[in-house]
Structures are given as structure tokens and as C-alpha cells.
Length: 114
Length: 112
Image (cartoon, rainbow over all chains, first blue to last red; front, side, top):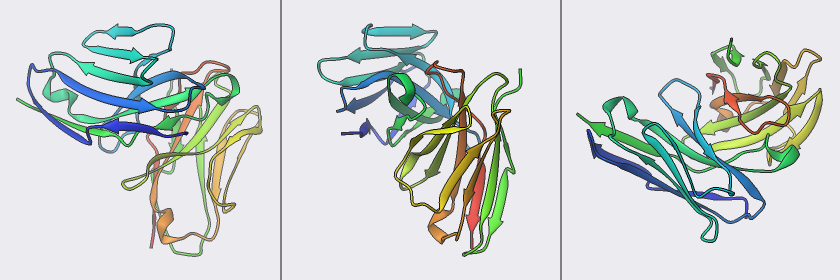
């Protein structure tokens, strides 16, 4: 019940295209859903996060869509750029004192071709 | 503002040895969490410390332990190293009750 399932494992898009990564969870106690971006040799960097009280959050070219009833959330990267090529992780956290324990998806390797 | 600092960046140890990794959180952050990242298992939660107390613990054997000091710096110790402990160990810090976690660059541990 603690799992977060992420798909696809890898994704190739052309420059200017839309990248879409999906995640699904089972634990209804989760109330915080961040996305992280990781470049080789670096730690994960917080990209954008959403809570269940909103269905969509947009920051620049990055948008999270959240479907509470389906227990699914997704990351959309608009106008994808070669510099977006990285590994993306979705994660989920439960409330209160459990925010320090994030459950991560398996990651998606995104390649954006010029 | 300095980010999360982990030292050392790289370590090579022999099977059976023990190792200590260090994490300095962002100034003012009191929560420090540790994660293990491997190609096969992905990012897995080890434990979290808040105000020098372990608050959450993942499903790792007792060979993995940690502690936090009064200045919020944290150390992680792995005893009796096994080949399977080879991984990138990541530390993340949070500001109090805030959910946003910020990661360091990690310590790459190789066990030979």
C-alpha cells in the first residue's frame, strides 16, 4: 500500500514536444505529491509539488495534474527542451510528522532530442 | 544560502568494514532524512531525524543507523558492509513541519 507506481520507465520526445509522466498510488493517507528532477551525478532537485485540494498546478513549463478519485497524478512538460533531459521521480508523502518519509516512484529517464 | 552538504562525495570500502557518512542541512532546517538510491531499487527511505530524535524509519537492517546532533547535522553509519550496500546515499533536509525536502548531491559508496 506504500507503493508509488511510475510510468513510463523511459521517454523520448522531440524538442518542442510535450513530455508526460504518470504516477499512481494506493495509500489514501498521502497528501503531498512532489516531483523531482535528477541529473547524472547530482541529487534530486524539487521541481514542483501538489496537494490533493487542487486538481492542477502550473509553474512555467511544468504542470502537475492530480486526480484524487483515481489516485493518479502526472507531470506535463510543455515545449520540452534538450536541457530537460534527466531522470524524473514522482513521490508521495503522508501528513504531519511523516513528511520526512517520502515514497518514490521508480523514475522516468527523459531524453529530448534537438 | 548554502544547500545540503554531504561528505565525502565518494567512498570505496571493503566488505566487512564500517562507514560513516555526514550531512549538513540547510541552515535552519531541523529535519534530516536519509535515502539509498540504487539502479534496481530506486530511492528508498532509510530514516529521518528531527531535533536529535529518530522520527521515522524505513525497512533496512540494523546495520544501518544514524544520529543527529544539536546543530542539526546528521551522520549515517553502516556496519559490516556488504557488496549490496553499494549505492548513492542521499540526505534531504526540511524546515520544521514544511513538506518540501531538499536533497544534497549524495555520497557514492562502493563496497568491494
